[in-house]
Length: 257
Image (cartoon, rainbow, N blue to C red; front, side, top):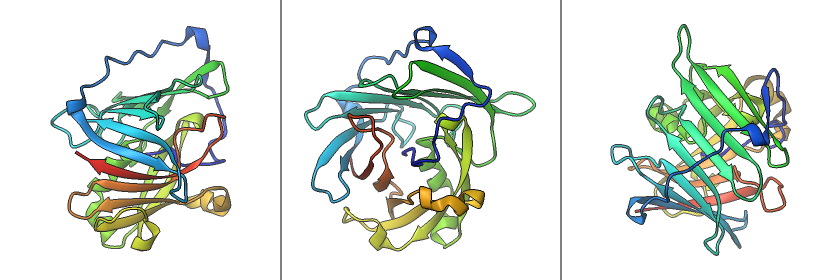
C-alpha cells in the first residue's frame, strides 16, 4: 500500500533524533529473491494509462502468508530503482518495513516494539533531498496502519466495509513521525478503473480535522477482487517520486501468479 498524502507529509520533526547520513546504520538487503517466489507484478501507469512509469515485483518469501514480504521497483527497462522489505512477524497491520531508493538518499524504516506498558513504533526517515537520517519512537495507537499493512487492515475489516460502513485507521506518515486518521469506505465500482475483474471499490479520505483541509489531499481509490480479496488496482499518490524528485499520481494494476 502506498504513502498517499500530498502536502500533508511535510517534514515536521518534533523531537526527532537527527543523525548525519554517514552515521546511519547501512541498509543491507539479502540476496535477490528467487523468481519462483514471485507473487504479483504491479504495473504503475500514468493517470491516462498511456505510459508505463515503473513496475513493482512482489515476492512472497514466507509461504504461510498470502502477502508479499519483498518488493522490487523497476524501470520499464528492468533496472532496479528501489526496494522494500516487509516483516509481519509482530503485527499484520503495523509491519516492520525497510524501503530505500537507489536513485537518491531516501529511506524509510519502521519497527513495531511491543513494549510495556504500551507498544511503540520506531520510525526512521531520510528525505530524497536530505543528507540526514532522522529517527523517533512514536506511541502505537489502536487501528494503526503502516505501509503495506493497509492490505491486511482491509481484509480484516472486509465484511464491515462491504456492508456500507466506514472504517477508520491511523495511518503512519514517516516524514511526520506521526499518524493521520483516514476513513475507508465503499464507493461505486466505476471509480476503480483499469481492471476487468469483479471489483469491490473503496476510497480512502482524510477524517476529523484533516477533512477541513481536504482540498490538499487527493482521495485514494483501491479496487479488490471480490472472491480472493486481493488488491487489483490502486489510484493515487505513489510512494516513489519520479526521477526529478517530484511526487506523482499513478494508476497501478496487479497481476498475480
